[in-house]
Image 1 (cartoon, rainbow, N blue to C red):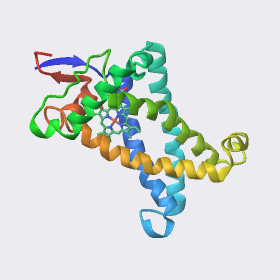
Image 2: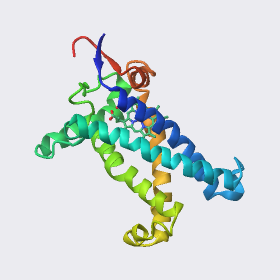
Image 3: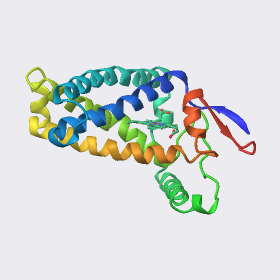
Image 4: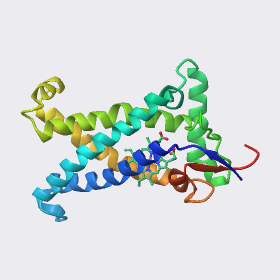
Length: 210
Ligand code: HEM
């Protein structure tokens, strides 16, 4: 096996603060939404934790954003090659076939990550959507719900507090499902812990021939 340095320190710091924060936000969000049936903690405690953590993850988002903007790697790593659409679609289908079938019969993963091309096409499109669209949208709707008066111009722009609530709750459902699928996919390395370990050490292990 050879080691490839895939995850720089700022990305790892951002990722694990974000992962722990998201799990707690999902749980406290459920407590806030289902006040009578959850019974994890009081409504007030859930609101307090949810709001504080929301601001911590807002600041944490800037670690990710600044790292990728300042290193100039955002475009290279996150943006799918829209100038080669046929190749991108072909590679996406190949990757989906691997996840849906090939992996069950012992095929090798068709994508071999390098620091310049870390993500397979399915990761690239989903991570791009999450990082530049869905997380910012969750943050903005969260701010509107946190202080509707202070953020009323933003609330009006988005169509009112009901729309903000709908989007924020809809994304809560999306992120709850995402975490389960993302965790499952993270266990599909050459050992179940290989990718997760790499997200701590920075180094992914690859077979010598790649
Ligand atoms: C149980 C919690 C989590 C685990 C075990 C986990 C695991 C991992 C692992 C192993 C990787 C590296 C392999 C890969 O590129 O897919 C990764 C990358 C990534 N994860 Fe997670 N993750 C978790 C939670 C989350 C959450 C909550 C989000 C966002 C809402 C997230 C977003 C990402 C993104 C965007 C990357 C790519 C980061 C980069 O290299 O720029 N993860 N995760």
